[in-house]
Image 1 (cartoon, rainbow, N blue to C red):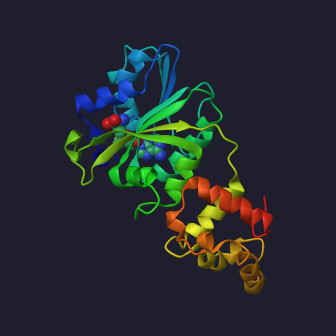
Image 2 (image 1 turned 180 degrees about the vertical axis):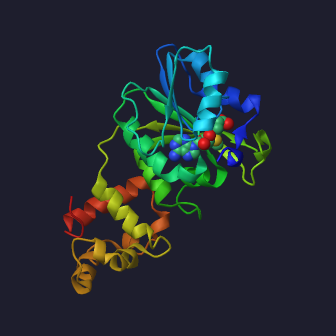
Image 3 (image 1 turned 60 degrees about the horizontal axis):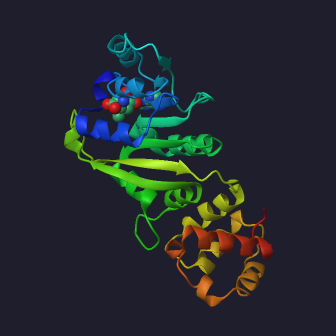
Length: 262
Ligand code: SAM
């Protein structure tokens, strides 16, 4: 496993990650995929404590050696998807393992949503980050964009060229800041969006009809009748053109019409 890992070696990018994390000696940081500890050591200098989670025991052992003088790092040999994140964490700072970008982002968002004044600084593969940031009408606008923008404020910190890593990967990266909105996340809304985004290039009317198995009303004729009571300007619009706020309004209309249930 060790030979397949890709490490950040560019000091300027590391500095940007650390600066954007705005760490103080009150912060407790979770680093997911701490590798050989090259980013951990910069975090440990600025924060009160770091939880360094690494799945690869050889790498974790190497990081323990590299950080032998730091007394504020707790090393955890685990799969980040399998453990409960420590409750006292105030920041998540990580050059993420890209293979788990999607599930780990979901986990991070739900975790930080309940924590006041928290945020995450995360490195992603460029394409994944672009999808998180994407806006309506752009090809990349997807359920990932809706989920991230509904639950968080998302900012691009910097693009990172593949030459900043060793061994050099085939893809570029991007550092993203995720700040949770601390909302009451409505799972019904997310389920509705997940269903219609399966048909994101269709208009809303067709997308809802094609997702009827996932709606509260399954009968096509009844669904058509209720959808037809909505304004054409909504039902004839393509799904991928709606902003998150507009999708929320549409979902509330769907509840009013009995097409969705809370
Ligand atoms: N932190 C180092 C750096 O900045 O160069 C390494 C980052 S490397 C892109 C991602 C790290 O995540 C690797 O060390 C890998 O072993 C680890 N990793 C992969 N999957 C993981 C998982 N499910 N849980 C925890 N760590 C994981």
